[in-house]
Image 1 (spheres, rainbow, N blue to C red):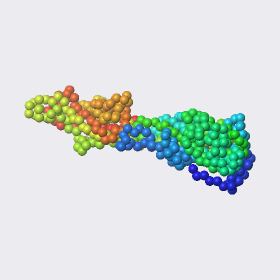
Image 2: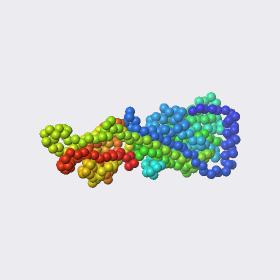
Image 3: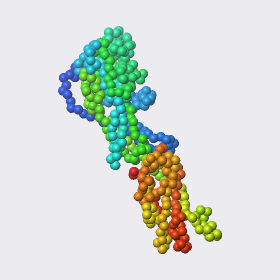
Image 4: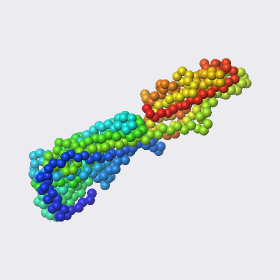
Length: 423
């Protein structure tokens, strides 16, 4: 924190303080604070299932990030100034008459909405830190009757019952940081997870007191992005500022500036869903176990015709699987010969470890059907990065006999397997 003092500045401020009580009330204005976060799958950390906060922060946590690490905070410096409307009397009976701050420290819930689909997710936010600079109209040593050369930190501690603000007060806990001069005292405190008031009683009369600005640190809880659809989610959380509001400095210290703080959330989810098929894998040739030699050379009829085709899957999003067929046979695809003799083709899928169905079960030899039954939802438990899966194609034994009865013939058909992230 940069600390600057000067007699000229102090006199100008005292004059402004004297006029404050004569100013007419101003209409409420809003200050939008943009909070942004993004999720992209990370091949180097596939188990990571959380957003990265990309908010452009300001204030305490930007200037002194080491103090905001555990637990992590993001801070905003609000251009809101609080002035006393009347002097603070020594030993005042109500905390509302003196220096205080009321903060919404409890977790509050809000909905963020997908800008395309309208689907909503839940976010939680709380004010987890508070900081400001207290500024007096006369030197603090004069206020408490200390010699001029007394340490400013000592004199500020004598001004308040219980000592310096930086040592913590009520639900506002010390971070170990402060900065002091004869005119100003700066600090930043962490807020417990309650809606509460942090206040100190003045032990000496204070003709005028100002909060130069308001630093708010916040914490954020977001949904698990692997459970969310790709896209942008937006929402907001309003906090009123002033006496009786969500953020208040009491009945004496009144805000000048915005009287509504609006946290505007933008969460961006950029999932990956990619399927790699090896070269030649788009042409699937069905054969009996061991090939055709057993039938051609020994006359042993094949029992079934099948082929397993591997693929590599990159997936961080939910998806469903569907079929499209050139030739339909019941609820699946079929293949047929030049005489239009058609037989059904059973198609199944096995997905790699890390992908489960809607009930949380692994996916092995799961039938693919035209109506999508049984494959409506697959979801990752972590980012699956280029892991192998298998498509199983088979003409069942009951149909192989029918094909052989047609004599030498070629059966063909086009099958389209769809991985669809629009779930």
